[in-house]
Image (cartoon, rainbow, N blue to C red; front, side, top):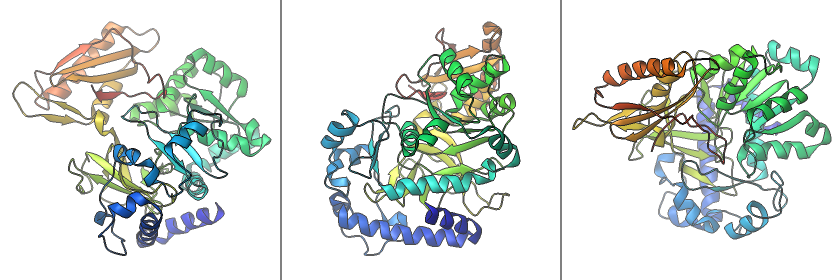
Amino acid sequence: MLGVAADAWWVEHAGPEAVARRQRARLAALVRHARHASPYYRRLYHGLPAEVTDPRVLPPVDRPGLMARFDEWVTDPRLTLEALHRDVLDGPSPVGARYLGGYHVITTSGTSGEPAVLVHDRASWAAAAAVLRVRARRTALRPEVLGPVLRHGLRTAVLVATGGHFAAVTVAEDLRRRSRAQARRLRVVSVLRPLPEIVAELEEFRPTVLVGYPSVLRLLAGERRAGRLGVDPALVAVGGETLTPAARRAISGSFGCPVLDEYAASEVPALAVECPRAALHVNADRYLFEPVDERLRPVPPGTVSATALVTNLDNRVQPLLRYDLGDSAVLAAGPCPCGSPLPVVRVEGRSGAVLRLRAGAGPTVEVPPLALGTVIGETPGVRRFQAVGTGPETLTVHLEPDPGADLVLIRSAAEARLRAFLDARGLVTVAVRHSPDPPRPDPRSGKFREVWSR
């Protein structure tokens, strides 16, 4: 970890060309290893140049294709899908325990399709942790964060879904196993429990750092404003969902501390970290991030992508090269004012969340989830919402008002804002319907999708 941390710090100060050199060298080494040790990639890359430093030479891969050939994909023949289910996922191995002495096994929740089983070797796991710490330091080491932590001690509450080998809980339980002292300072709080129980546990633990999904932390911010939660964190770190401007304001305003956004996935656990200017920087020295269109062709900076291809340059046991992540994103056209040479990305959300609406026989209009979500989420009195495309000309909205707010008035205000938004895009006949059901998180993962298409 020290070596990775030192390299990450050096690259950050060495400029864009140093990042590009690291990318080329690590990609070439990863391709050589994948060809040698993975039967799947050996066949897939047959006929390609002997040395590959440009990722565009490599054919893209996706989750269903890789999972169908799992035993040929991994580079350790002991890691069969059957054995992993028997020994870890459906077996006696506790969450966070290392498998076969050094592997970390996680699974996705499957909320966006078929679940994936992912294995990280010790080197890639340590590299992700080191890179996150180095790149988050400019926020985490600010005086307003360090002061309270030094006075009251570092106590971190991780608010995630439990009951499965999901990435966030696996990371937390792995840290807790390393020492008793660390186990006392870090607590996993299940977001699948009722809100009053979560509040009671946080009150008892008194964390100085909160980590979790933006939707859950926004709810807790509301509890603090209402006087039902008395914790005073020095830092709030969010991930797992898109952090909207409204959610950021609610969280930072209620807790009175910095909010650190991290963009990651189980496949690429340290993909991007926010800088003090609130821009997400891709850790391009460790991951390749390629926004592409529907035909998986690169899109220029400033263009909203249909999806993104990612490459994990560190994982050798389960190589991921040009993997279709399923996220819609935009790469910034220029450098960040913060001075970092790492590229800036804005995440629009899951590609399946892009709504494709039309008015009558008119053309289909793609509506990014972040834009639509901002329109509803900025409506005064809206605590939580979900907007679901239930047809090409129908948008169903689920609203949860702030305590004491008038739901009828909030629905009317939200509909007026939505009507103006849709009409401006020529979607004049798209109907906005209000559901009597409140918005709900996924019952398995605990994650909260604000916008998606049914």
